[in-house]
Length: 127
Length: 127
DNA sequence: TCGTCATTTCGCACTTTTCCGAAACAATTC
DNA sequence: GAATTGTTTCGGAAAAGTGCGAAATGACGA
Image (cartoon, rainbow over all chains, first blue to last red; front, side, top):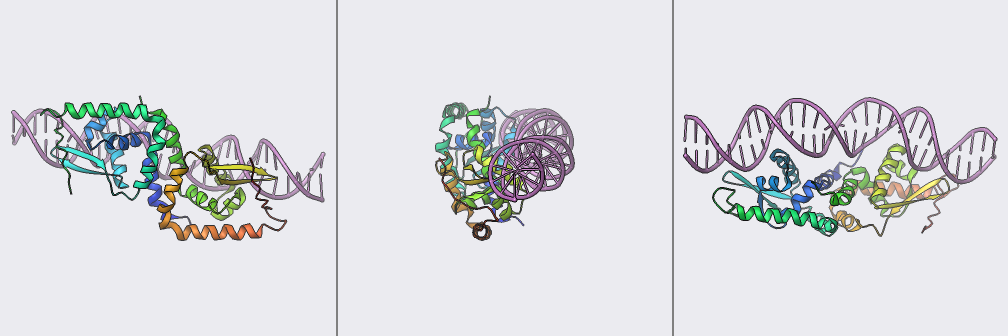
């Protein structure tokens, strides 16, 4: 009776409709991160972040790949929903301070983990 | 701790993330309708449609005004979230057949209600 | 004034989402 | 092999979303 052809789009919009997931997407604009770094920046349990990332991956908004023990995440350039995401950035202006704080923290983490003890950020591009 | 500045945007995305509300927005692209016409086309209880419209109005995506006994609804041209909505239309391509059916039914209703028995569609533009 | 009709609000049942910690997996290091 | 570490899956609890019919509201018309 209803419009199931709208389901993929609705799925994408649901994936976008959460502050944590928007913060993750904004973080990834600066480049890839590993799951533990995202969890650290957001101050959430790794399992929670993992579940949010699963949602984003299901809609094709991000891609993930393993690097040793770590799972790296990045924005998927070729995502069908990319135009929606692009339309979103300007509307995040009201949150730019908070988002900038997230980004600064991620930047710090990235440097910190260049030493062998942390996530060794090889930043490789997979297929 | 979290990003409450993202709340308005998240609210907009949540408002968009439902097939019924997307169908309503698509319907309104052809022009204003009254609530009972929307309910008729979608085959839903008036109370359900009313609640969906309340959500859309809260985010500023639609505007409503009274015309006699009826409440007319239209897309809000000046909505802050309008760019997101515009980015959405192309992604609704997969549903264009169902949406076209909705629109045809609405068109029929609009004509039918030009006689004094139904909703008398004055189609006036309020402030 | 009373009845009718379009709409909204309310109460309720039901489903989905969200978050966490515990346990299970996976890959590395000792 | 055993311990460690990053990640995911699972179970469950709390919160939010969804849809309806019944009742309340508001406006028109007889």
